[in-house]
Image (cartoon, rainbow, N blue to C red):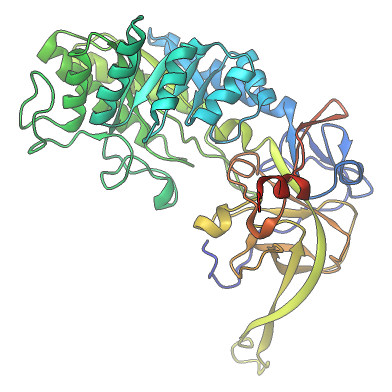
Length: 490
């Protein structure tokens, strides 16, 4: 739903009484008889007093279980077809020292996209060989840091980067740098255009499209695709080890067929390289982008289903091509941390706004009725969750601190920033007596909330608070005005 959409009939707020919300909430969320939400045994009212609002709240047990579920599902499914698999946590969704430690302790590796994310993973004690470095425009310093840390893979995103990584590796005089070539398969999957990453007209990867690409590697031909040219270029450099081929087709994907089509294209490229050179790359990365539920009634992509479907597909493709199966890897991020998090806000201004009218029932002479949307302002906004403003992402909110039997009203949850597009939840039914001082919880904000947060209007970023077994722990502290002023040198 876009920010300009008119009134709709969104999911109703949850019933009163004790209940387990289920998706899109984490498994540790409950509502007690007094109407207050608890997360892993922690009452959100107490959390708000102790930590303030806004606050990102992360359910540690839920996050760990989702990490285990993906690892177990893919290991079991790929073992059935005779292939190994590694699961990398996509740190761009949200990365902190604690989260990196949690996922690594659950058997996952860590995928990083910048030098900053790499620094966090290393600070957490994740071994270099269990870290991958992505990025479409890596700096020389980032490449050098990755090589010095002994990362297990550098995902090369351009032909010029082949040369830059080779030069950095040569300067160190050590073992060849392990690299993967990221390719764009032409498979367009996921939600908004901005989060679909395998179509041709965008910044990531090297295309499989052939013809007129030039010959910039030994053995390359004019009709070769940029992807094939890059693979040949890596093989021509003794300073590089061609570890594999990487593909990522998008984000928030709920249909597994896109993964299967993309995997087939990558395996075809692998077979073509082997026919050409005799070298069969040992690994294939199928990326991430597994979708989650953001609204009540939505169903997340099931790890067991996607693992079995993709494993069967790659086994069939490899058999058709007459090539043995490589080792595979995947990169879930949102699917692990997204549902594990919620954001807790305090309500301020509540403002009913007339947004239109509806005609009376046909034939009964009723007058038209006024359509009112209640604008519920909170103490955060687009600085702690930019996704609704950036690409119309939908979220669900509920009253979190008390019971209410007031009739539901159509509400829009908005922030405190100086932008009319500062919307956190476009449309939701909330109790009609929602008022200043109430707590609102917004579900499934574990991914990309804190990661994409800003200091717009000089608002300090909220803390990340972990909850487990009735206890809380601050993972990332709240920023202060002193933090903001410390950066301003006048």
